[in-house]
Image (cartoon, rainbow, N blue to C red; front, side, top):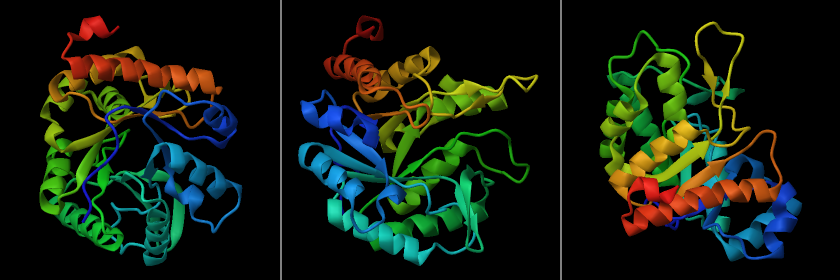
Length: 288
């Protein structure tokens, strides 16, 4: 089985076809590009021509949104076979998925839905992660979710659940720091305390993205919207993590209200500066 991740410890961005011309016009100051695997499960056409051109120049990360790893039902073997063909075709440096479920009885929902953290769901998720890794012939990364409610059936903390999955399966973890900030704000926890308890030894990639506040709610409710710049508190949490871990491959996610390429590139450059400071062991304040 391949290593957990071969991504460079640099900043990357989520690829959007609207940026393709700008990206290939000159060498870009990013270490990798990430795409959602489900967008490239067709046989060919312009999407694959663009992806092949990117793969020649940069490391590639595949990020899945449709495996429904958290479901109590069996994995969709046809979907898994399509994913394997895509991995075999492009040999990405990393493959990741979400700790969530998104399908039931053959019906796919356009959401990443929560699951209770119990010994039963732990065993099922571990079984699914093992099956994915065996089918792909590579280790995968599992991402912490953004949360909007606490399920009454849960008997384990999220960080404990993720740590145990990594221990049982050998998978790595993808730490989405914006998700941490969103979840802790919504549920009343402390994001630094969450990160200090997180099994950082298992983290092979970090995600950063924007969120929005739902003004219709009386209490603060943040939505993991991926449609705005990374918020200052999330940058601060990112620096806090890097101070403990050193540089880790870091993706800027911006999937909605997509800006022009220079704006997205500037977000990646901010992450790149912080990674460089972490690599040099500089105090966090000097990376600003």
